[in-house]
Amino acid sequence: MFEIFKSMLKEEWRMHSNLFGNNGFSLFPVFIFLFTFCVSLVLPVFSEIFTYAQIALGMHYLFLLLGGMVGAFGLMSREFMNRRFGQASLIAYSARTLPVSERLIFANFLIKDIVYYFVLYVMPFIAGFALAVAFIPAGNFHFPVILLLLLTLSLSFMIGLSLVFFLSTIYAYSGKLLTWGLLAGCVFLLFISGNLDSRIFYSLPGLSLFLLPSKSCFLLSSGLIIIPSALSLLFLKVDFPQARKSFSNSFSRLCKEFGSYRYAAFVAKDFLDLKRSEGGLGKLIFSFLLPAALIWMLLSALEKVLPALNILILFSLVLGVLSSSMYNWLTEYDIFSSYAFFPLKVSDMIRSKLNSYLFLNLVPLILLILLILKKDPAFLLPALLLFLSMSFYMVSILIYLTGLSPSINLYNGRTFAVYVLSVMPLLLVNIILSMFGPYYVLVNFLLVPPSLYLLGQSFRKWDRIESPRF
Image 1 (spheres, helix red, strand yellow):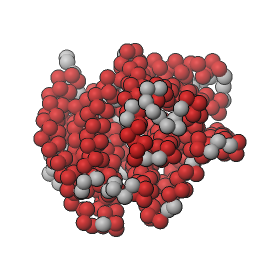
Image 2 (tube, helix red, strand yellow; image 1 turned 180 degrees about the horizontal axis):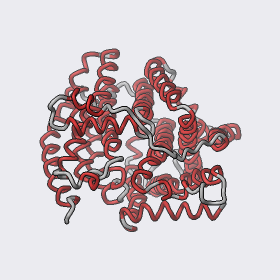
Image 3 (spheres, one colour; image 1 turned 90 degrees about the vertical axis):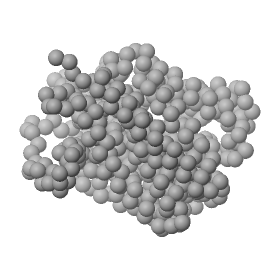
Image 4 (cartoon, one colour; image 1 turned 180 degrees about the vertical axis):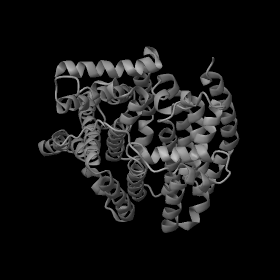
């Protein structure tokens, strides 16, 4: 078993280092360490605004979501890897040729993911935080507590990862059941968000263990990791499709619905790809609506503690950032070489993806409008303008830095550093501005000219870099 685990770790590292180079990928955890260190230096300022328990709450839910995102990425990347490299490319797909069971292989795969992303995300975060608290008055975050924080953040991360692994098993048996279940869950969370007691958020086992260490909290956290993982392995279902999937021809009909629109064929193809790929339209629920519902619940709880914060404005801001992940969905199944024999440039492909992105943004736009109309219609205009300007800016930065491969290029340490530094100051300014009134955020309209300039530069940059030479 250890040989498979070791080989999977090597495989993961080689895959990433071949894509970005050893130095580029090695810089990724280094950047997380430096970024956490710098942000943690302002902990005394945050301590004046938030309590010790609230800061811990933010950290643990961040790692719970991070674990869920790593698990979701693993689920969606299965098809991505198949399309790029074929089914026989990874050890995880070798159960048919190696004398080991599928359960043993996927148990190794799960442990490998936990160890690999623990080193990549959790350790640099804790190391940066621990170094920072050595230089500042950090209150209750003294050294022995840092060790407990390492344990509880790791548990929260693994709970998120294990739960998503379990959901992927349900999806393997019934995608429709999972999709409708998650949709109902999102609607329920949004419906009850305004009436929840904020103390319920502290019942997350990892967070409870950090605030009030006890044997029962540790056992509960361990159970939430072990039981979903064990059930997933017990009912593991791996499909090795023997025949091609077939669908009725809906491409022509979809193109006609877009009319003579210049990018109609590309947008129609993107929507069919999204619908027919692994997870189908359930990706929209799992990777967007569910995180958005959880963030809305957390912000609703935060509003009772800090009434100065305008949660509608903050949610618009977060939704604009979250929406940019839709560009990843649109680009993860396409590579430009598939289109190289058509009279197209890379910039044509990027423009078509940008058009599909704008169509997909109708989902968060409608969600935002419904929430604002329910809570306070007076904030409709500034919240919508903030969302649109942020979403446009975020996707412009993403296109400029990563082109048609955001899922790959963002793991380059240098690229990720530039991306974060381009976004974080803007988010902080907007959070501060939202405290002075909703119309201060209209200053974000100033982002439109640089976004348009970045897009123009992006088209020229990626035409130059990715255009094939014969």
